[in-house]
Length: 152
Image (cartoon, rainbow, N blue to C red; front, top):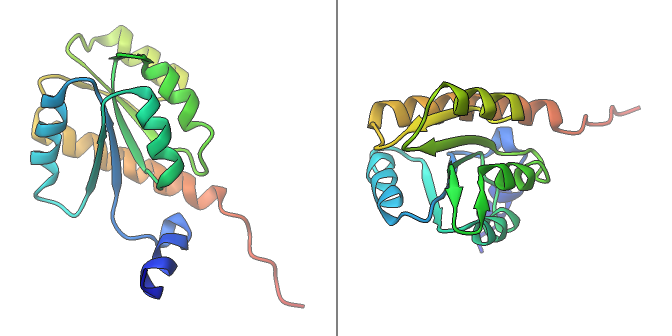
């Protein structure tokens, strides 16, 4: 791997360019639609079908935002939220659901998620929700970076 790529991968989150979104859904059409929406940006989409694969992806790369289907084949968004909390800095969670309503939205926010996206996805809503989540992640990432020691 070229030195500049290694430096970029090892840079603090606030210095890394671009955005990596992890899409976690057992529905292939979700990944296809999000891929189409993100194709007009420099955002990177990593798609997985279940919680186990999401955990593997989180160990391999820095993810800023996770979009997770409400119910997964091997768990739920709450299980993913627990996994995200182990990352430094933790990715911001957006839950997607065909039955998005006020009670789901309140539950997501109360448990530490960022937003709920109704399905079928609307491109403008997805871009807005991911943009807001990414901004939130960047702020959190800045506050979780260790302070550099002063030269004496």
